[in-house]
Image (cartoon, rainbow, N blue to C red):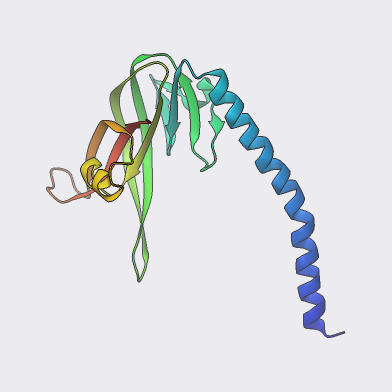
Length: 166
């Protein structure tokens, strides 16, 4: 047989063998997420898309986070105001290249109500622009922090937005 055919067959066999454990791992992760959300539906559920995260001065690991479908960290909190600290990141995709945007360590207070899910992430557009783009099909924005490339700049490049899911 041709060496190229053997290489292709080898890659396909390797892909098929590795696909099974990854499918099982994905299924287990989805079940853990669904179970976590169901068990804590009367609490505050926060989906975090950030790194180096602290909540009320404690590392995120103290809250026993679950990893969500989009690799976000999901935590259960008590209702009330919490201090969130983290580094937020997003990617701006252009025709010619991608630009990775990364914030400094940001710290802010945000109030949460019991029985709701919240998403906290960096977006390239303001809450109003996102609401117009998605024709109103976004959650209620409960927090918004505009971010610029330089301090005191009027040129806003991104926003950290907290949404209450509807």
